[in-house]
Length: 252
Figure: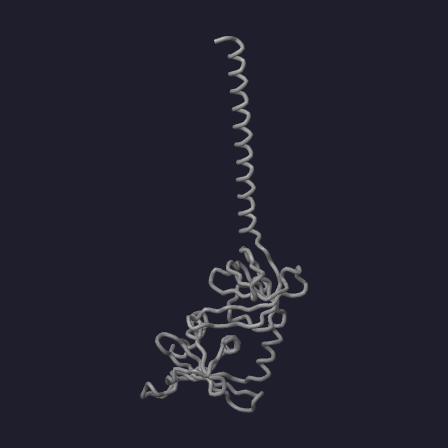
């Protein structure tokens, strides 16, 4: 092999090494950029502010929020949105954990999500909501309104399922707020299962100058709240748990 051929071979090998190194470096940078974008999306997400227009409860007990973006948002986040509320969402108010029963129509909230939005659909579905923060500052005011219109609330057995006198339990102040939080966030329907209430909730309403009564039906492991005026509503698992804690005090 001549000296000239050796030179060409060496030059060719150098070119191959340089090209391979350049391509590898480029691919590596692309992977780093993509990884950084993925991490940024999960950790930071996108947050905007919205007003709750409706809270819908479906037959399976799940809740969906329909919200309207506030004017303080970027123009891309002033439309209508909808998303399902589940246990994976971090819900807070003033740094404290809350649940769906603490929200009501008209509340302002901040929403943090990590998925891409499809703005051509209205309301725009949000599939990966990771945090909801309640921005309400008037909880004390609402409690005062309850105090002004309610003197006592009793929960008692109907007496239909036992020969012994029906038991009765008078709720304390915190339990009164819990009951109103449940009832005020229920979606009532005139279609009922026509069951017989196991318990009654009765409270003295100064607002309506008389007693207001709700029935509690237990139907196939579901709790239904009934009202002659409003109809019937199914409680979520969380609401049922809250009500169970109060009912158990009556039996203990």
